[in-house]
Image (cartoon, rainbow, N blue to C red; front, side, top):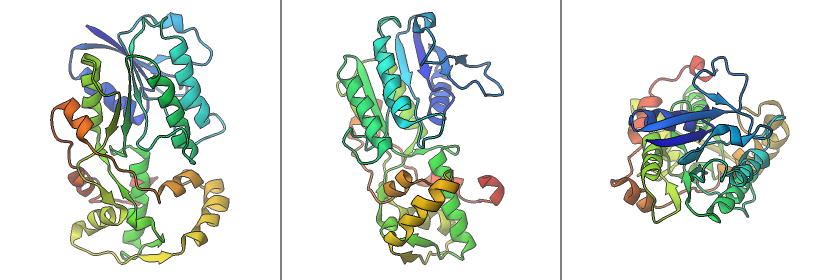
Length: 301
């Protein structure tokens, strides 16, 4: 039986991948988390990757690294979570039995990116790819209800409906194109790589449908066959408010990096992933329709 260690198993992607692999009934799974403040850690192996002895973990056939953050805090920064963890993992790879490493990155990751989130992801990707039997999966926005980016979009949809379908948005935002992906496509890609090597080592994980933010709003607001009438204001008027007020006092809503990402297309061809999983990537349209059919304030707080 293949023994798999999942780092970051308490996060959104880690939980979903863990459940998917467990349902196959063909792997021995060890789920790692570093968070000691969970109310129930019975399903996790609690381990501090910075200070504890990796030799205590045993040997694995595969390590899946799902660890990552989308905003920094006083406890975590992008470089330590994304880069230092990968450096430490590679330094201890032999102690872990020289496992295959499957790394969950992000679509658009690039070591030269101007946005710290994608820059640190890109640095980590390059470190891994310089070593054999490593795979970097770069998913777009994961269509999972608990995904923090999906939750943020719910706020926008809620406010749009509250404003009689006349949302106030910064210019250029509605034209941005993204390519969300179903969680099953990511999990199945991981599953295939756990079993067998693959010719490609950098794999974009994207859905069937590239969608502009305008199209997404039309889908999620127009479930009841209503149209939207956006009111656009200059982006340069919104930037200082985001940077100096919202990012400081309400970072859970949006920070400066996340704001800047709203104006950058994030798409890729799905053919590499489709060859891996042996089918077409799934459409996400039904997810958006069903997940956003009813949104109340209680869903958002």
